[in-house]
Length: 144
Image (spheres, rainbow, N blue to C red):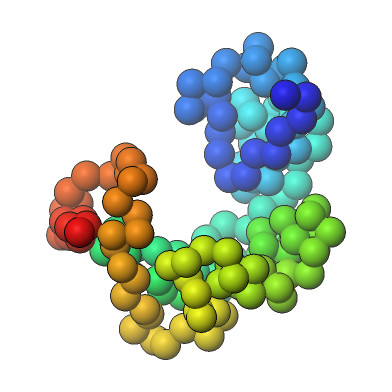
């Protein structure tokens, strides 16, 4: 591997030593300075969760959207737009690509979710090893 794109992770905190990071060309999309950004050839600023809108799948496999709470720094673009531009794509097509290529998301558009979100079939994620266990208020949905 000669180049790596690291998005919102401190690779050193995940066990990748700084000496290994120094051996590859890295582009990092991050909100804060850390060992990974220090070793990066290019660092792209990212918006915090409070400064952007988006969607996520919660621990009970509900696809939900969230709205920007505060404005981000002038000129800093949302992750989806940055990643789309790096891929030479249009950010507006991200959800159509996800919907076309991820069976669980077929027919969905994260920009047009109902207020209560959309319950997904947790069985689609059965093979994935999640690091999260039982949470304070919620237990993960059992998968079929």
